[in-house]
Amino acid sequence: MPPNDHALYGPSGASIWLNCPASVRRTQIHEAKYGKQPDTPASLAGKAAHDEAERVLHDRIEPDPKSPHYTHVANYTKHVRDIIFTIQEFGEAPSISIENRIETGIPDCWGTADIVISARTEAWIGDLKAGQGLVDAEENDQMLTYAVGVRLDNPRLTKFNFFIAQAADIANPIKSWSCDAEVVDEHARKIKTAVMRADLDYPPLIGDHCTWCKGKGSCEAQNALSTSVFDTANAVEVTALTDAQRIFIIDNAPFIKKYMDAVIATALRSPPAGRKVVAGKGRRKWIDDDDTVLSVLSNYDIGGRVSPVPIGEATKILAAKLGKAQAAAAIEDITITSPGKPTLALTSDPRPALDAGALVFNDEESSDA
Image (cartoon, rainbow, N blue to C red; front, side, top):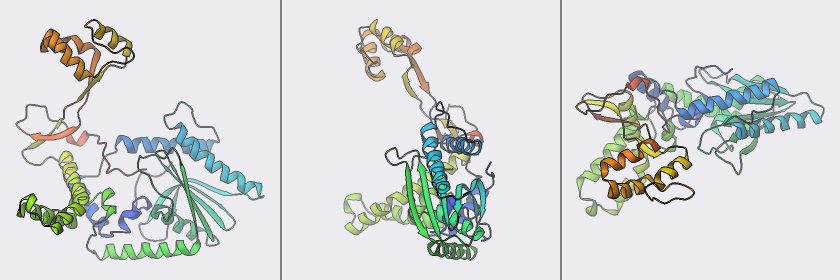
């Protein structure tokens, strides 16, 4: 099983700290103040898929067709076995490492690779992605960081093949890319430069990498950009903004949204004075039994032969026939209300406060395992 702790310069976050070395320190500051992000349903699902794939490869068994990760795990493990079979066809005995720690030789830069296969002067490094975001294998910073460690362990390697198995890409679930050892060596130099800049506390840089940065809520660059945009917007009426001002706001809107989302996330985990976390408005839906729902609705001449009409429509018809109170009672047994998402409210709000420390969030800030 892979270890639970994480390196300061872990491969999974390489696309962040290579582009912004200052993110390492900002993340430390942020987590010291607000705590580390808890597991989300998405990250837990990713861990389950990894565990399942590891068992299939280790125990040489077939994926479980009843598993929610069956198709994804089957695609990944088949690709791994195809590589091994091809190597064996050439009379080679491949070296296979499953979910093992890879050291890069650079302080605090190591990670757990899903699969590493090597034979003679060639290596194959694979990654299982269970998240919804699509990731490209070409020049992938995470994969290249693993390769630095693999090459350190076996300097004879001259060619590196990478593949990423993605659950979200149904049409093309396996993406591949190859490079020579010189590309891996250049990546090692990039890592050393980033670590040096992080140690020297270089200023943070704004970019697409901010999306997954866990320290963006405590980043002065994000704060300065947000302040600048808000100052521009507040200076004049929207209709009076110049083209340059509008372009400035539009171009930076995505970064401002990421920063605001990060601020809200920290407030949900550690509510500021005068606020508390409560359950938001839940979503009402029909019970998972169309026949029962249709039977009840038919008693009031409400249509829908194959599937029920929308709840809102049925409620309006019933309210017109029975009145609001009786309408609500009539469909109470055939509807359920899913829990609302945690949200901030004034401490005077009558809704009971939720335990912020025990909440599980399903947000985009959790990167794929």
